[in-house]
Length: 154
Image (cartoon, rainbow, N blue to C red; front, side, top):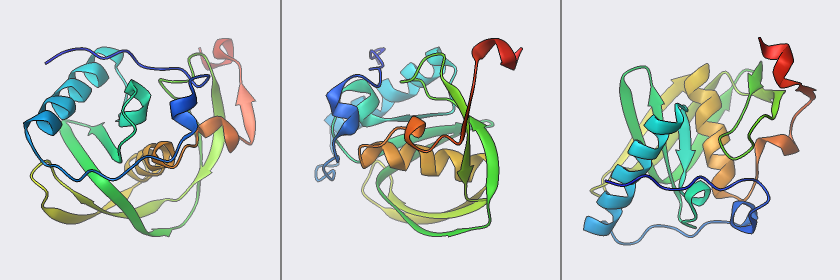
């Protein structure tokens, strides 16, 4: 495994629509392992492949003690609303309140290409939508309703 450099929102790849994953091979497994190590080191909740310079439809999440991998993800359904404080590893020192769904149903493939569906609530739904946005070339600052200065977070 290796740490990958997390790109910032000025990098053009973060504003491109990512391509689907077609090969479920050792190269993909290495990428996913690197993403997990990078996310652990950064102490974040989620990480999308374009954030490390890979324009593919992949994101991971670390929710509590669970590591979730979503390849070729689709959000099938959302429900409810939550107004939540959000940040992003690619937008250092930027924080703001956004509207996200309270629930999200995700359909995705695992590292072996097997499809699964899963419902997430609260932080899981927020992170699912945030990371999926990255795969469509969007960063959270595009939907912030109110920015918060870092010193206001203390």
